[in-house]
Every structure is written in structure tokens, then in C-alpha cells.
Image (cartoon, rainbow, N blue to C red; front, side, top):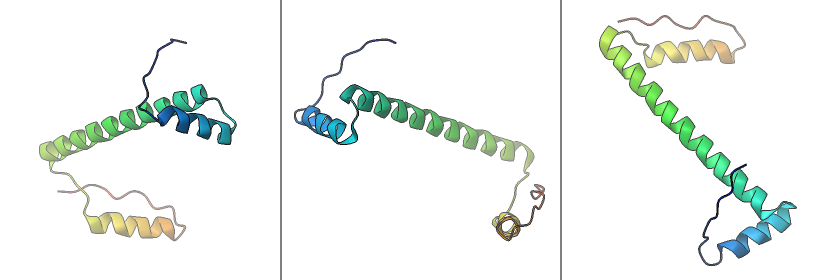
Length: 91
């Protein structure tokens, strides 16, 4: 593992220590977990935005799409316990 240092705002170290004690974890564990979750969240958000941009480009290129009604009809069947095929995109 790599080692790094971090400067915390006044009062944050005390809050972190209190939380660590309440959670029966080390402050190091909490900081590591918080950073990991933050990085995961940011990576997922970037991927979501890239996927959206790719989908928009695909739509602009092909014109293929699903309407709100297409999706809602399909989802109603899924919720009802059916196993419908996903609707086919159309122009």
C-alpha cells in the first residue's frame, strides 16, 4: 500500500476520531473507506456521462430510439412478473 498524508480542517480530526470509536473502527479505516467510496462514485458518474454521450451520438447517427410509452409498457410487464423482450428501437 502507498502511504500519504492529509491535512484536516480544524475539528474534523476530533469528529473522525469520535466516529471511529462509535463504529469500532480505526480513523485510518474510515478515511480509506471514504476515499475509496468517493473515487468509485466519481468513476461511475464519469462512466454514466460517457455512456449518455455515446447514446446521444448513436441516436444522432441512426435516429433509433424508444419512446417513454415504449419503456413504460415494457416496465409494466416486468413489474407484473412477466419476462418480456425489451422493446425494439425505432425511428
